[in-house]
Image (cartoon, rainbow, N blue to C red):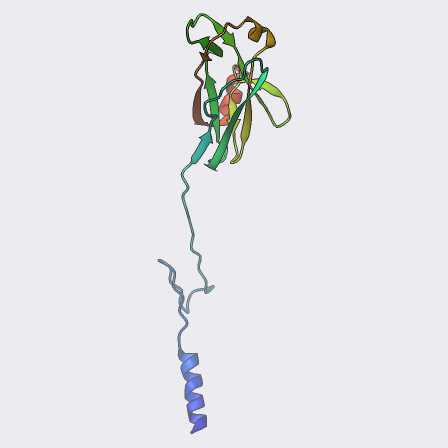
Length: 174
């Protein structure tokens, strides 16, 4: 009797068809080879956060003042794309009482190779998450010496755009 049950169990196991399922794909005993492929996809929209400096107070008679950083965070950029930050400013602090009285200034940044450049002539290009451009406000001693007493201010606008950096190279070649 035990032999009979063992034989029935062995027949039941070998007679059971093995089936694998994939969406819209069928494999049967006539398929050669007995495998199939499926494709896994995802779609990530470009997104990023650019952090810009907050309001800053420039200390009197200081030639170089820390202005904070421009930083690219939480970036999901397409291959070959970057974020361009352009600064718009008069680059002149205006006296609150008499706006004809000004103190000229410059905003500079230092690149990865240690070269310092004025942002009056250049933009900041951010290509990778975590890219940081430290900013400095510079006022010459001669301009401090010429300044009238009073409260001064200026507004800096940070224009941010998503670009193909190759278009920048084309613009500079022309």
